Length: 428
Ligand SMILES: *Cc1c(COP(=O)(O)O)cnc(C)c1O
Picture 1 (tube, helix red, strand yellow):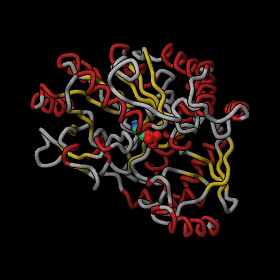
Picture 2 (spheres, rainbow, N blue to C red):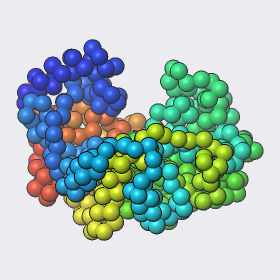
Picture 3 (tube, rainbow, N blue to C red):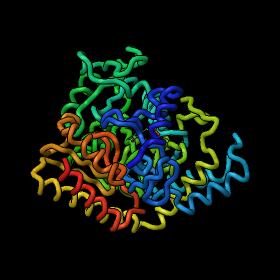
């Protein structure tokens, strides 16, 4: 394949955009080479600047659950844009969106729209702190909640009582209020709560981890967190930016039958436009300005284009629950096929999957924590990534990202993907 136009653009981009990209995961840092620049996408396919076509397993990192340029979504955006792209005043669409979410999702009595998943999680922990009057939060190693300062914190030497910045520019003052527990390890959470009993405002997690491959919660983990939070008056926040409307219309809360106090959304909720949302119990959400004292605002929040796109997609998903069954079938064919090829070639592997989130780890299982995920063979991953790319399959360019399937994928696409995988593995 020829990538010359992408290479040229990347060279230009690198002079005027840090690292040549507007979000780090798009750079090919963990796989080598230069990123491909996309010109258009339709359904399950992408085309790049050199005219190469790819089967897409990133789905814009989640939103394109029904495929790219979904005709009803495109139409809604076009029709809305004609009447202006923003008013800075309330609209009917925002009400309908909030009604759709609150009437569908467990535990969400009220919801506030924002512009990204990052904004949703940042706002949620502020509200949790305001509501409880406490300061500290617990997050989990390997979970991702966007780039808010409070989340760019790792466990340091005094891990039981404070964290340390994992990025320059984050202050120690911020770090001291974020503690890190191990995913799927309830005891690690209990120890942190015990050591900081009177100051624990919130526990935030991905109820199915999707940013360290795919790691589902172990049996009893979410329920255990729920009990711990009830016992100590801690706000339990499910970050469903990835899982919301993907694993089920009602998200991971439904699948595992655990209701959080607050939930954050992003990605699918905007159908590819920049949207996030946070919601929860009425008594908590009433702390948000202007009904309550916790300040949070946004000039473009609830933007009409974003609401039109998101509302159209969500309504389609709600009215077509068979989408989730179809995705389940396609994803299992893909995951089983990949597993078969890897075992035929005696390559150690573990595949974790929840619905259309598929995590392939090139190591023995089980993979239940970040440390487990980190055992994946990264060199092999890089080779497989490039082998697939040159055969026209667009996989996430990081060993710590799951595949996100769209329902636009056909049985033939999946079969072609498996053929490409077989060829790639044979070549390596
Ligand atoms: C993508 C993601 C975010 C951040 O969302 P942005 O829209 O990129 O700011 C937060 N939490 C989870 C679980 C995510 O997957």
